[in-house]
Length: 173
Image (cartoon, rainbow, N blue to C red; front, side, top):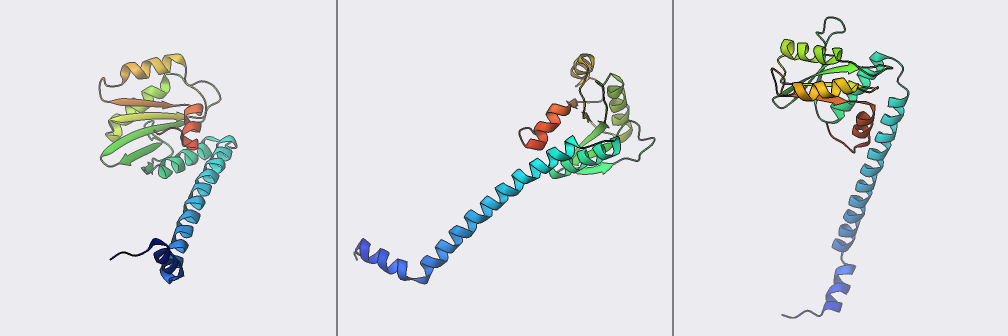
């Protein structure tokens, strides 16, 4: 049975199905645009927060929120006697100890000692240091040499620029 295309389209446009389909397409487009707008707004809010942090506690809370937004289960350790870990991360079976440092100068090798010690205490195979500052060349070299040797399989160093890239969505942990 042959149906002439013009007749078919004219009948289809006059039906209520046509209007339902067009309405659904419009709703989907609006939803996508809204999602993209919120994502962009979220990034700009987080970047402003990063620039306005004034103390170590605020920075720790900020890092915790970013990690939660990335899908990690975040456990904050107690404030004192935390053995060098400020945050414990879990994603699946992966456990990571994180040292959060709000610092004015470049970080030295002591941060790596704290991460290594806390990884033993908390049973983590990976460690990370997240800072609002930068790392000295010695720390970067030492972290590369220590990774995969001994207890820790991986040591991640996230400085101010890398953290900014994570917040902007240009980089994953």
